[in-house]
Amino acid sequence: MSDEQKPGQNPGEGNTRCGFVALIGAPNAGKSTLLTALVGAKVSIVSRKVQTTRALVRGIALAGTAQIIFVDTPGIFAPKRRLDRAMVTSAWGGAGDADVVALLVDARKGVDEEVEAILGRLGELKQRKVLILNKIDTIDRTRLLGLAADLNARHGFIETFMVSAVTGDGVATMRDRLAAMMPEGPWLFPEDEVSDAPLRSLAAEITREKLYERLHDELPYQSTVETDQWKTLKDGSARVEQTIFVTRESQRRIVLGHGGQTIKAIGEAARKDIAEAADCKVHLFLFVKVRENWIDDPARYREMGLEFPRN
Image (cartoon, rainbow, N blue to C red; front, side, top):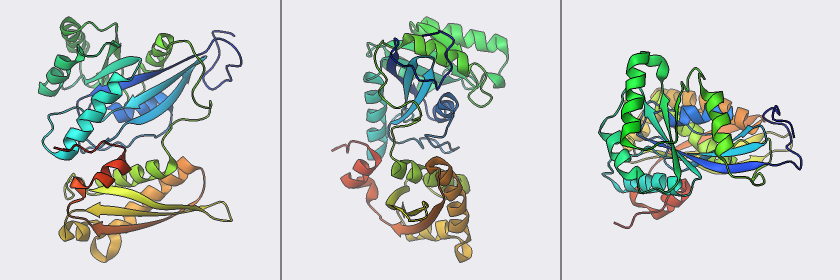
């Protein structure tokens, strides 16, 4: 098999590699944006609102004869609520199961309290670790090199990558280097698959992204979306019904908007992205319900792929 094989080509019976890379970091370090750049398709939501990735999201990328499964973990932060604890537990669990752990640091922010806390626990993980400095287009080179030296002095990273998830600078080179670190073995997914997330789950995440984009300041963090129905129609299109859960009636009115205009705009934006992900026409129907104590409901955690913390 030629070393010049392009991503997406069938590896045939040659020597293949396949493994997992866990992306960990503080909230808003750019993990979801980087995952999209690595995979070449949206598999995780991106939002200005921190901690929007709640469960493990896997994106699948190809580099030559290697298949890399990137695990986008929730941002690691000091948990205060039950949902926070579930997310942080999920993040460290995802890191512990990977072949390589990649610490993503926002180069513009540098080493803050959240990064310090993550560095303090990295030594507990036995896997090889790499450092990814993201948003390199936002700071000067001298400061960037100083940050890289500082972080490598704190922990023994086997390699340091400097990238911009937004512009794509350095992403392809990093993907190729990570591919070489993967263990030899057969691919776990078909070559045209970009995520192991069911369409129902991805559709719910897309709608949650549009909800946050539209109501970033007005809507609190405790809101969630569930896909209640995904029905393929005779013409090949899909009827998708989703429920947006909020914790108070006042929030429900905000989501609906005057004359239903806000929920209509959210639905139109979500429908477009869901149709692109599903590669078919989508008829999206959104409902908004108040569920005051959903954040303490074990069933909601299972729906999000999280383990329910008992204390």
